[in-house]
Image (tube, rainbow, N blue to C red):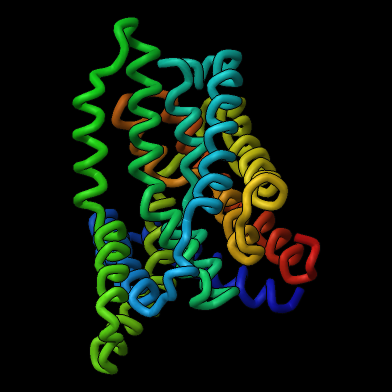
Length: 315
């Protein structure tokens, strides 16, 4: 348990520090966004490029991991859409925003840094494989969901396809994974100088991501739509990891360590992209905002429990 506390308390301590600095106006929203952009466009891509460039081909097979992780999200997505029908604050557009909040967890700014702080660089492969398609798949699914709910004629498939390709082609994480895999094929390895540079950037990703998350949380509110907020937290932080656990342990072939990391990532609270989707469409914003803010606070407890179960061999 001591190893869990020495991971979780510093991790959430950095989040609290970022939140307090933002509330005290030492750091403003623009600076927080800059930190988040550094994490997603520089630090994490550097870490993932280095990981992929030195990886054996056998270690990089993603199919079982993707099937278990995104299969669990797909089932929870349907459940969220059905639950949203009964909750006024979530039912708009067929519950698209609710489903997005159920599926989109904070893997980049919380799950990845938390796992790396506890397990080390071995987390890089499952983290990269999930992050590479996480946002594009879920943004596309949420857009399709909303369009089909609002338009009897169905969505514009060509437009959705172009948007997906654009998201994949301009995603620094996807590009870093592809570049790292191509570099690995050359067999050249990494010279000590670029290797050290990439390692330093990767090391910066954990504290920067956590501090940036704290800054971003200062903008979220817990006011209003309490029934919807608690429904989203329950779906995201309890149903999703349960589904991913079942699929990764009993249905698909997933390496044991990857399966544990997948469950940990699945248990992360609703992420900022879900809030951005709700805000963009002005749908279910109070409930999603509350799920992000309160869910992140609750994650200090739920993540501690999960890490303890992993460390003691119960998972």
